[in-house]
Length: 257
Ligand SMILES: NC(=O)c1ccc[n+]([C@@H]2O[C@H](COP(=O)([O-])OP(=O)(O)OC[C@H]3O[C@@H](n4cnc5c(N)ncnc54)[C@H](O)[C@@H]3O)[C@@H](O)[C@H]2O)c1
Image (cartoon, rainbow, N blue to C red; front, side):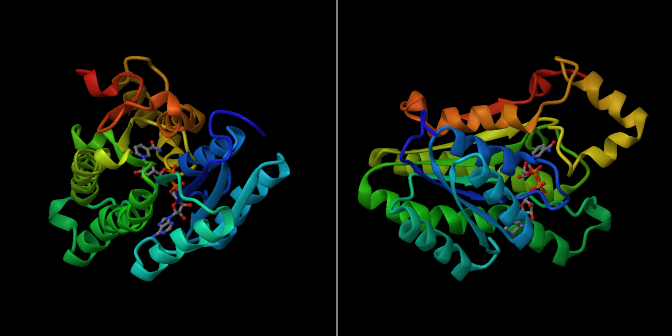
């Protein structure tokens, strides 16, 4: 495969889709490979990591599955080391992991709060630290963090909302601090993406119609529309884009419904 990311080494954390089908991380991993990159497909579900890597290999791309938990500090180190030993570089880090307990303020326990923030922000912080330590030495790199419009259009799950707000701030901080090393850090601000993780909520037709009406474009996105934006941000086509929080939301951010 050849393309905009020919010869690049990419780590996608949360590259699987537990329930089968294709989520955001999987679509991004496949699209990076289609653009010519070698991809380490990281997931804490071994089968999910394997399935994404196998799909890439079946298409003739280069991929390595890796079962690892982003909430584990030593695992984050291992992820970066594995990419370096398999593909001799870490050009792009794509942080896709985002968990949600689904509880509001009054029903959320301190343990649930800590877990959600720990995985969504702590994991991202540790992965960025490991990858940027390497990228700084080689003088180039791209970080892509997955955020949500929930950061500014809050859902009841207070930890999820706070974690995505923190993802945005963390991304801006990285962009400001490491741009001088030719490391670009950007975030994707996702709206309603039609993935197996959210589809069950839309089995309720009333909820589906309410959500559709909130989107100016009156449709949900395919995860491959997220992937197109990710490949762009990872590529040299985005060579001067640093510190962008790019909505991929059909206009949900600017909707007044
Ligand atoms: N689908 C949407 O509508 C939507 C909207 C806004 C934001 N997002 C964001 O998109 C991202 C994920 O979307 P998705 O559809 O790919 O979700 P997903 O849940 O299908 O995929 C996430 C993957 O991450 C893995 N994972 C979970 N915890 C992990 C951990 N501790 N370590 C390593 N891997 C772990 C899961 O096993 C899963 O395979 C999240 O950050 C989410 O907040 C999605």
